[in-house]
Every structure is written in structure tokens, then in C-alpha cells.
Length: 538
Image (tube, rainbow, N blue to C red; front, top):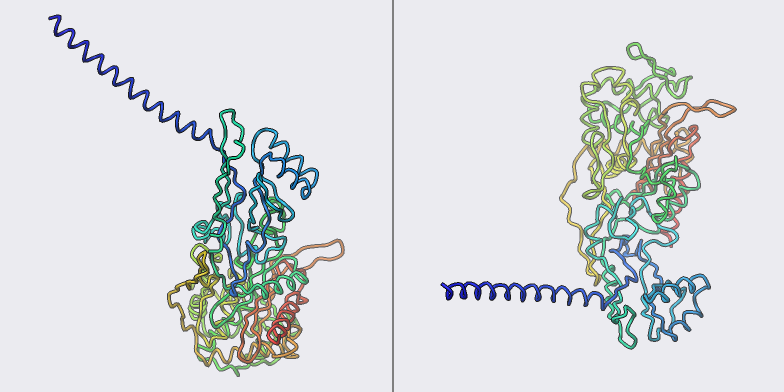
């Protein structure tokens, strides 16, 4: 009996010793890991994410650099830094060093780096002026995640090419940095050379923004290459700086909104669609109609903008003078279903996708059943009523005219580069679609060029050299009042191509909440076209 008890006690003792050993081992491992953590301290000197380039590989972000340094309380380092830092910056750095911690400072210029200074050239994400901020979008404060625009749509790619500069120091038992022990440096900032190549042209983007800001307070401008669908410039007004988002969050003018992708009442620029519908339905462009200043549809009277009437008109004259009465009569003859089919093929009831995760608002157009109501069809015929679309929808429409009736979808991304500069082209499915005939496209171009004649509504936008084709539009959205007068609030449009022969550019301008129709958009078109001409001569 005693022997069995001793054997039991022995087994328990062995088990107990084993447990103690295991506990000691685990505790020791944790202590080792904790000691290792406590024997090192790491500071992040700078972070960056992948780069946006324009079509010519010119960086749109990360183009400038700043000098940043990780610093310890080394007398030689402090002597050097006292000569380049202002008093406030030096004082702030000194307080950190007095606490026994390394400091990170931004330097106005590079310095010789003695012991105690680890110097880095860190890409600056956003310069003082950022081109195409609405296209690029903005990120969170530490550049770790894109929140809007292409920063968001291409976030996985830009994060993949993200980099950091880190310095790790050895720390003694007292928690102070160990003297004479070289820090460990981890610098992957060069990875940010990789990123996305956009269709934008930085020079065209800059002139577009500068010219638009001279004439428009709120609105959008798009410059597109019709044969490829490449967006060469996209500007939204008012603008903002991606590092100062908080300053404009409550701004009533909504600077963060990319108006080029938002829906607006289209007005008479939609007459391009109405004319295409009629021509495709077999209507002779020489069809005559007499405009007396208004037309009655059912119980509704629709007024032409010329209340005295335009008189006897053919289609090209009605188009050039933007006669509402003519187009109401024209479209009533071909019917709502024909108009709905044409508008649908031109995506006036859907969104336009520029890239995965980057689309316009969904355009709105009356249902075919709605267009069976004569007054609804009349409204739609000259771009009023339920119709809304983005400036990009209008740019795609004009490009389809230039491309002889073939719709080529717009795009914003050309391809990608890795950190070594190797380029990979963006792969896109063939999406070209025949919308109307070459003959219809030729007639539309003839009519659009007539708009810039002396009798046309777009004559003030005519470029100095090369001619152009265009369609103007004003969509009334309400009324407002000043102390002196009451006035109509309208969206003002000028949509066209340049030059007239072999067009290389589609240019669309929309001025939001313009106070009248005195063509705030026309001078933008003219000045951009004239500047593009001069650029091509250099």
C-alpha cells in the first residue's frame, strides 16, 4: 500500500515539475520578446503611395520631394541642425530629444549627415498646386487609403507600390538610445515609382483649368480625344486642394464635387440626339417648318427662345438657331420610341464607366411609355423635362458624331508602370458600337459647324483658326432674385469639336447656375481651342 502511495506521489511530483518547466519556458519566451521590443525603438520618417502619371509619363503626384531626417541627441548632429532649422523647429526637436527619444524633422535643404542624422528624400504627395484634383481624389491623413476619385478606384494598385522610410535604434536597459550603435534603416520609398499612367495631358489639363477659372464659378470642362476616347483634361469648378479637404467640407459651393461626372439638365445640346433620330428615321434635312415663336402641344404652349419666331426654317437653320418649335414638330413626327431608342444607344439612361469603381452618375431619360404623352415628348425633344446627364455623356455624344456614328467609350487609365518603369497597357474589351450612319454623322457635323456661323447661337465661340463644330444649350432650372431684378437660373452649355476638318479634340463646357444666357461657356471653348492650336505649332 505504501509503495503504491509513493509511486502516486512520485508521478504527481514529476508532473508538477514538468508544468513548472513549461510555465518557465513560456514566460521566458515572452520576456525575451518583450525585452527585444524594449531594446529597440522605430521611427517612421516618411510614407508614400504609388504615383499617377499623365499620358507622357509626367508625374501628377510625388513630383516634388522634401528632406526629412531622423535625429538623435548627438552633439555633431545638433550643431549641423542648428544652422538649418528655425528657432521654433529646433526647439520642438530638442524637447523630443530631451525625453530620450529620437526626433523626426523636415529640413529646408539637404545637409551633411554626421552620426546622429539619418537623412531621406521623401516624395511629396501633393505640391502647392495639384492638377486634376477631382479626377485624382484624396486619401486619408496618413496616405494609407484612397477615399475618392482614382485614389479610391485604384487604391489596391497605389497601396501595392507604397513605400516607407523607417529608422530603428537600439535602446539600453534604462530606455535611452545606445551610443555608438548604428541604427537600422529600412527605405522602400523608391517603390512609389510604380503606379498608373492616365490619359490626361498635364499641359492641356493646366490650360483647361486656367481658362475655365477665368469665366466660370461653378461648372465643368472636358477635353477628349474622340478617336480613342482618351480624356485629355477634366476640370471641375470650384476646385480644392487634397490636403485641405476639411477647410471646404461645409462650403455651400461644394468644391469636392466632380461636376464633370454629375447630372445636369441638358437643354438644347440634346438636339444633336433629336436630329440624329430624325435623320435615321428618314426625315429629309430640307424639311421646312415655320416658327412663329411658340407651338401648342395638347393643352401646353411651348415657347421658342425667340418669342417673335424664326420664320421658315430647314433643319440645319433650326439647329444653328436652336429653334425649339422646329424640334418639337420634328420629333413628334418620328415618335417617342425612335427617340428613346437613340437616346438609349447613346447611354442617356445609364452611367458611363471610365474605369472599374469610377463612373458618372446614371443619366435619366423618360421611359418609352412616358414619351407617348405628347407634352413629355415635346419637352424631351429639346432637352428639357426628365432628362439629365453629365458633361461626360455630352462629350461622348459629340465624339460619336466625330467618329462617324461609332460610339467609342471614354477612358481615363492608359496603363501601369512598375517601380522599375516597365509599362503595361490597360486591357479593354472592344466596346465600339455603331449608333447611327456615316451619312447621318456627316449631316450632323455640317449642322454643328453652321452653329458657329454669323447666324448661329455659337458664333462667339468660333476659334481664330481652323473652324469648329458645336451645339449650345441653356437649360432653365429656376428663378432667382437680386435687389434689382429677377432672373432665370440656367445651366449653360457649349459642346463641340475642334478643328472643323479632321477634329482632334472634343471640348464640352457646362456652367452651373449661370444667371443668364450671355455665353459664359463660349469664350472658354474659343480660348481652349486657340491655345491648343498654338501648342501644336510649338
